Length: 148
Ligand SMILES: [Fe+2]
Ligand SMILES: [Fe+2]
Image (cartoon, rainbow, N blue to C red; front, side):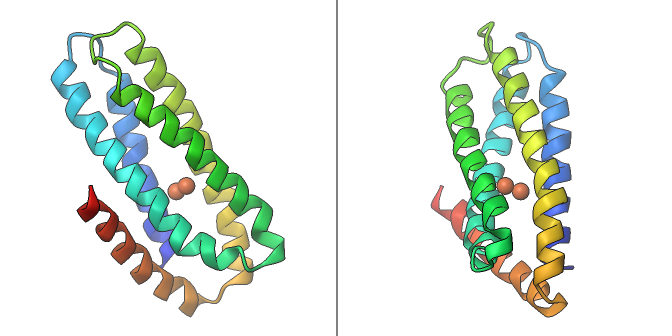
């Protein structure tokens, strides 16, 4: 498995969690709390791992720089939103709408990575490099989760 396959696999897990969270209502406070906490930790570690492995490597390539910087800007927007939802009570009437905004932005972000960033990666990096980046990605991600 290479880094792109690993990233895609994780994106699909976040898509599922977002769907499950979007299906909750104000009575499901425990489910919201548990699933959102899982999503928040995973996505945060995923972003750090992307930035310190694939993106760091791609930024050396002039042709990929714009897409990578755009993705990093989106990570910042997403971090703010995750923090905002974390600070909102699960039975607050704005929790659901906030989650909906997160879902739309995160889904757009993941689609764009799988489209534009993956295409640049396949064009510019070798198969061997994509394989070894996956190992770096996994160790960076578990290191981040240990810090939380
Ligand atoms: Fe990302
Ligand atoms: Fe991603």
